[in-house]
Image (cartoon, rainbow, N blue to C red; front, side, top):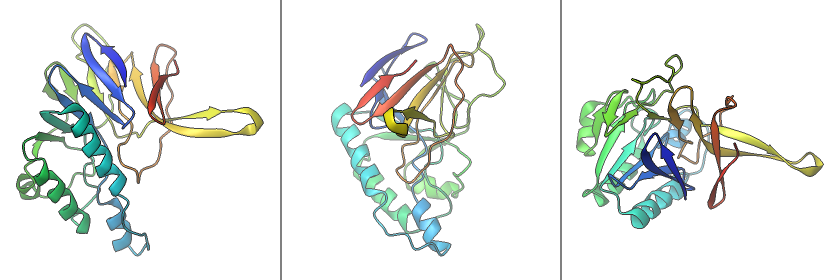
Length: 219
């Protein structure tokens, strides 16, 4: 866990690829992409099952460790249309019915409103304000920090960095990216069946890399 004072809002960056806000007992995460493997299998790609097991284990560990009252998914909860993995999610959701869960609409969130209602999910559009934080799925591209711009959390890009070592060794790792000019904190993709996107941080930005069980600030 790495504490971050994000424009006077106390956050904790977690190696499980999530953020915890102690003040409101809220967990934030993004881009779980549940159902992606099922979508590939439906398209004829012979992927084995079990891709989501590690993700649900991490979700359960986060709940056990932090005891959140709320969980916020910053978009791309389920990868596409309903497949066999939706039942797995709804069963997990029912097991944690005392936790309020909010979904910010992402580009892959295309299920019917009744599907989300039956899963006891509250759905809000991008730009939803949550106790001083603006919640988005897509990053801000044009907005620049000013006195009236409120800080934002977002996802979508699946940010990652390439670290080089001796002997031409390198490794790509997921990261949190704080863009100062956009007053924005981008979360890494939570789902295991996702890739890493390239980022181009400015000199004033901060990068926090997830390295095993640690979150390490690079710049």
